[in-house]
Amino acid sequence: MVIETDGLTKMYCQKVGCSEICLNVGEGQIFGFLGPNGAGKSTLVKILVGLLFPTAGSARILGKPLGDQGVRRKIGFLPENFRYQDWLTGVELLSFHGSLYGLRGAEKTRRIRQVLERVGLGDKGRQKVGSYSKGMQQRVGLACALLPDPELIFLDEPTSALDPLGRREVREIMLDLREKGKTIFLNSHLLSEVEMICDRVAIINKGNIVKEGPLGKLLAGAVEVEMVAGNITQKMVDELSALGSLLKVKGNTIRLSLRETGDIPVVAEIVVNNGGRLFSLNTRQNSLEDLFVDLVKEGGADKC
Ligand SMILES: Nc1ncnc2c1ncn2[C@@H]1O[C@H](COP(=O)(O)OP(=O)(O)O)[C@@H](O)[C@H]1O
Ligand SMILES: [Mg+2]
Image: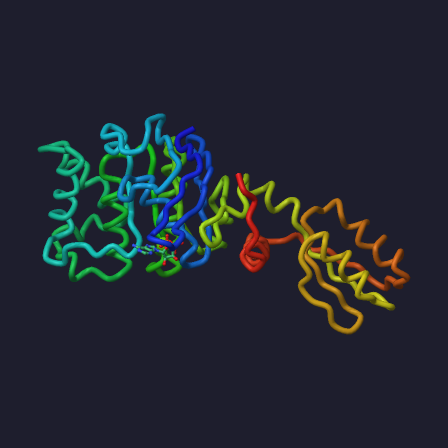
């Protein structure tokens, strides 16, 4: 495992930043860490890169405990909404960050050229960062994260300031890094993006992990059912709600999101056993957005 966390908790005075986070991230994965604003995504990443001390719990990164100096050299980090020094050129900024990583001389120059090319700023390195557009600033941040040729890269909302083309380019960079065996921890609230590229996801809400697993498996179980039935009773609705979450009851129509595809026949049984008459029942596989909205609305948590 590249990242293993055990009960990581951060309290900001009385306020929960993140609570009892237990996660494992394997080598060569793109791991999507999803959650609404204020859920605790940045807090966890800041703990993992060593910018915050946890209030409780522990973690191992690349096999070593938090704070290991050698590991820090192998980690790239693109912070959220980071403001770079406006007065530096792209090359100067990267040179500064390269020095912090211990890069020197010709090796540093070569890496700077490589990463600028990689993020599509090959011909903009002599311009001041202050003159860059928001998207270019985000790319130069990504270039900083890639400077040490890291084994593990933390990206906190890397595409939030980018237009659709820029987003696609960053996605391609992430896929290319995975191909090279790198591990990416991606904080995002852009569900379609996560659905496109992540191998595994965890969803965090109000500081707690509410779901975690391989993307395919998380989506395979969840399914939405819409049915039209006569003689709908409150008892029937209550029993149906227990199979997942109720999305709508209006007239003769009931829409609900099931946790398991295997519960589809149970839906029909509940209707019939409660004296209802089933006129139609249609199913639709849930998207990541459906799953996310369900979990975040419920506010429930699977404790680890
Ligand atoms: N430095 C801080 N001091 C106090 N509270 C904070 C601080 N940073 C974050 N928080 C709070 O911790 C919670 C999680 O924040 P954050 O990790 O930034 O969430 P996310 O990145 O998912 O938007 C929020 O309620 C936020 O207000
Ligand atoms: Mg954040």
